[in-house]
Length: 166
Image (spheres, one colour):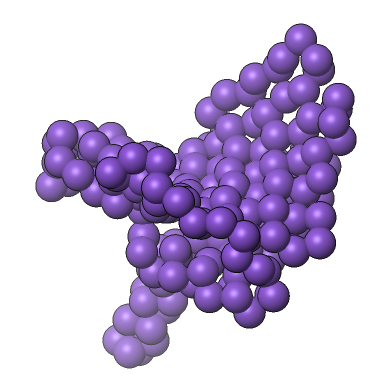
């Protein structure tokens, strides 16, 4: 009985710990989803609606984030976010996804290679930001690795991927 309780507890903890992580395949699928299906999917992944932005061209975006409390820093920090953009004027769609976990970043980089994306450009925006660009068919990826100040004003590495479909 005690082993069963421990096993179930570990399963629930592992599901929660990985629930915010997204694969490249999931990001591609999310980019194709309607607003409604996107909303349902990310809410089920423990994200919360944060804001929407409309432009004069009827383009818009929905922004969701997952805020985690850090007991060590006693502050509120966003470690994950996802934003969906749709441009009605150019018919392009974009997903931006951010994670603070290097394992998520490594998984995404491996999947980029496994899915056959081709590296098109690598560059540094500043001394704290590097960008890797990839392309496959109508999908363009920009993968960022950058240092960011956290709530305690110390550096932490943040990883972001922008997936655009034209």
